[in-house]
Image 1 (cartoon, protein in one colour):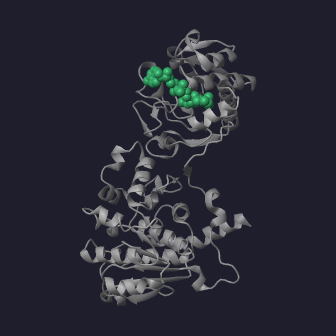
Image 2 (image 1 turned 180 degrees about the horizontal axis):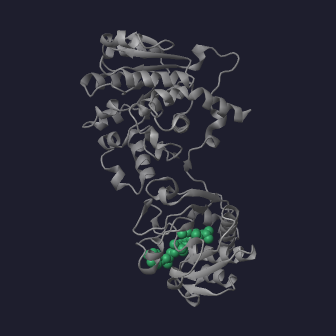
Length: 470
Ligand SMILES: NC(=O)C1=CN([C@@H]2O[C@H](COP(=O)(O)OP(=O)(O)OC[C@H]3O[C@@H](n4cnc5c(N)ncnc54)[C@H](O)[C@@H]3O)[C@@H](O)[C@H]2O)[C@@H](O)CC1
Ligand SMILES: [K+]
């Protein structure tokens, strides 16, 4: 963002012009979405407060009932904030005045995401007062970089930010304070490597068969089953992969579990493989191999993963296929190829990557660093699923529902990703599509969801997505 701003300033645009654009965008956002009620504008000492003053003057021109309160006396403001305050011709109260003043809405322009210490005194009191809040840039009280509140923090119904989303808008816990986030274009062309997952990113890449396609041209997904008492996870994954469009799907099963798997699968093929050598042979025709769901934390699983990573197809590794390398992560990392995908949950992530989630500035950075270590794309599951590839490209998926926190849900996600990769989709893109479709399926089922329900939502979801392309 700063680099992009400097480039714009170098072209002759001055920073106060940007602040005016930002403040105008704030006023329009507030007026369009909260068209009624009196507004208490809280202005901090810096740029965030400057935006507040600009927005207040514009809102007053829109005939809104606006009152302005400043953290520091207007005479003490400097730079753009002082220029912004001069635009506002009306009275300015202190923050203390604001505490008891009647209002319907608060426009929070106290601090942006660069805040370095917790809110104190009246600012902290205002943050904890409750009521309806709209925040400028981020809810004041949040550390933008770490995507966490530093202490007392406003809880907004809506947040307007500028040019691009920042980690605080999509990562928990900060995102839970933001409400609906709107990104205003203020003419700063930001080359961000962080995207919020949405069909807009990948809709035109969503695979669909052409008239000349046949099952062999749509990719062959192979999924490794666990032993006789843990076969369901792999079946969830392989069915999900077939549903999402892989032309062929095969469940590779230990001979002991052949009957139980064969008895429950129809369109999915079943093949018995006995040990890593037979597995290596069986995956020669695979576009993608998924391993981990129900695999068991055993030397056999480890040998199987090594065979898969020596094979021609891309790998999706989940669950036990990751945990089995807990004390020898490098043995996994040195074998992974750039096009492979790891889909850990937080526990598995910590087992593979140690304390990255604590040491990195935020979750996006942690997953980026993990993908560099692993040398492939990493998808960290959660309410804010983060997907990153080693070049820094990252996508956060918040299109989900808490009903997805159920047994087998992650196996279905791995299946969706593998099924899309089998159709030739780039790993980061396939993982993003999979996460969004998984979230959408979860939302459509809602309460009472079990993982078997997810795959059944896919035809309607794909039809709707393809319908949007026309
Ligand atoms: N940078 C730009 O070019 C643009 C910035 N804009 C606005 O400017 C904001 C960033 O402005 P600033 O960098 O001035 O940051 P802030 O507006 O958050 O203000 C930071 C100031 O507050 C002080 N401060 C930090 N923590 C404090 C605390 N707990 N108690 C009291 N004082 C504290 C700091 O010493 C610093 O002087 C953005 O959030 C956005 O709203 C927009 O106008 C768009 C353009
Ligand atoms: K703010």
